[in-house]
Length: 246
Image (tube, rainbow, N blue to C red; front, side):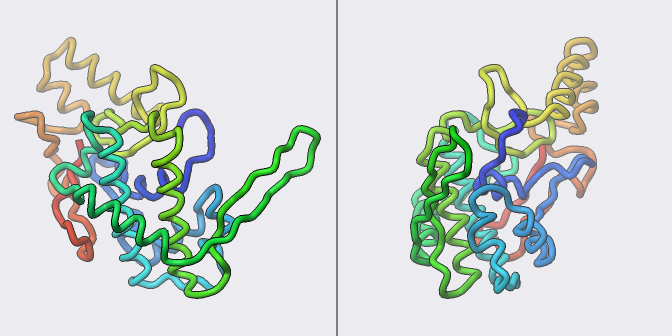
């Protein structure tokens, strides 16, 4: 997000599928180690919840649970954008919305929650209520539940109306618009999109496709860097299909 605002855990989760900087797509949750590193770096409310629990052990079962939750949240993000386009990473492989809702709600209900009142120091500070997982039970279940509740809060909140899929070449990220004219998730994506637009205007579509890293005959972002431009999802994904960069 270009506004400098702290991204939500829901956005952080869906954007673990991202452009790898070399014309392909990478998955931050493809390994147990990558999942543990991602959890350690989570921002916002989850930083005070179970994601930083000292008792949390990141294993492949937890990784698979988080990947399945990510699929559900990406499907619901796509629903939020309809009839506009979803991220190209989801082309042809979205989980049905009703199943995504069921999975998300079941994950959010995996552990009981307790309210917590935070009231920072300062004359202008206002109290804020946060909902945290009760500190008992399985730390992995608490982590998944906290991520699911973050997605519920996002989808039921005001930021949903500003949710967008980045339209820059090769980008597969979602973002929340910080101003009315924002089209891309970050400055580098805007630069890449403007360069492709400039070449398309002056040299034709074929040259523009080479500039943006694709080789599209029918508008399909198959790309010349096979197999880098089509990265298969983790083998545990129940809705496996090619993840295609644009």
